[in-house]
Structures are given as C-alpha cells and as structure tokens.
Length: 173
Image (cartoon, rainbow, N blue to C red):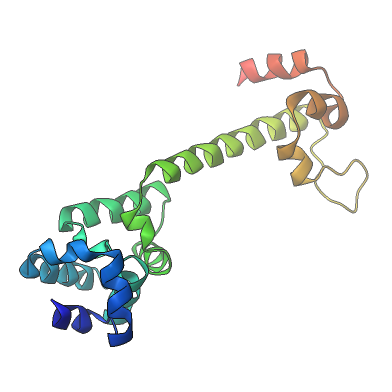
C-alpha cells in the first residue's frame, strides 16, 4: 500500500499526514485503488494532477469509479463546464469530489435566484426607460445597487415606482 501511495505521488514526508487523515485506505482493495487511478488517468488527468488531487483530498481514492464519475458529471453539467474546465476545477479543488454536494447545490440555488432577480429588475427598468448602466451618463445604476438592496428600496430609489407597480409588472412576465 505504501509503495502504491508513493507511485501515486505521495512523497515520503507526506505519508504520515496522509495516513493520519485517511487510515481507512488500508481497508481498500489495492486493485480497486489502481482501477480508480487508472480511471482518472483515462479522463486525461495527468499523473501530476492525480498526485496533487490525492494530496489535497486524501479520501479521493476511497471513492468508487462510479461515484467519481457521477461527481465529475455533476460539476460539468450543473456548472455548464467543458471537460477541460471541469478537470481544471477539480485539480485545483479536489475536495469538491469528496465533500458533500449539498452546500454546492445550495450555493448554486442562491446564484440562480440572484441571476433571476437581476433579470427581473433589469426588465422592469427597461420597461420604465430607466435601465442606464453607463457611469459616465446621468441616472447611472450600479450593478451592486441593482442586486443588493431590498425590493422596497429598489422600487423607491432606483426605479422611482411603487412596489405594487413592480409586482404587477412581474406578473406579466
């Protein structure tokens, strides 16, 4: 097992820390571990990428090929990334593959929600003829104000309309 970990890229001076974090690796079948490394290599991760990922996320090799494939697919699909960008992301942040997906899903939900809110507000401002995002022109609206203030303040200070008007407009979308 130690020779395998060294072959993967865990240096002698890193073995103690690695095994302290993931002593459960000794309960894994060596052939399964080799299959998981071969899977990552087949997905065009370099040997150096795999070494870096295993060092940063010690439990990575405890995950089955199916689970690794599902995780890679999740990030590629949900974040709408190319294969290369997905690979670059998990090389930099391999714990995305080993951690819970719930915080990721929650953050994505908040981000989509925010994008939807920006779109609604932009469309309302466009309808009112007040969508002006050029700081060099009068009545400039910063992106920060567009997204960070509550609806009441957005309507009063930015749109110069009532919340009721905004709500009526949203029902037409």
